[in-house]
Picture 1: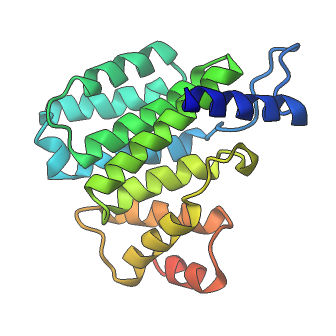
Picture 2: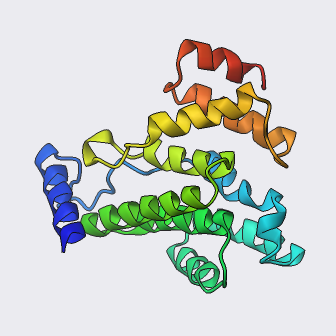
Length: 209
């Protein structure tokens, strides 16, 4: 199967550059997003009615809390993924959430091959979500964040430029949908601090925090 061979090739590359120390059991450095960024990712979706149409207000509150806990809990990550995956007629936002959970599965996996497998699945799911709603800044930001924290030599960070430009465009046009002021500020701050934006883009983003 092409995907299996492709992932196996990336695994060999990881071993070749010494990115994974299997003997000591250390986790690889990639995809270790800090809690502040993960909280931002997990809070971002449920400010929208399209997500609320699939979950009640109480369910959304509980889910947001559980998602933060899932950062350090693999079983909860799997449980939340299964729950959302069972929802019928998934919106673009729910699909994006599933992609983010798959990235968390990569964080929790101890096997290097499984880590690569889950990152690959995550980005395929994010691609599907963006195809469903290309103008959604939050989904773009989730994919940008996942790719930002994944080393470029793995070959997964191919959408950083296009997502960065799309995100900045929302700030240039002051088009944030129903996102609140705190979310707009936090995304802008992350985009500046990630050091991937041009000087002109940074000027635009800094106006919002």
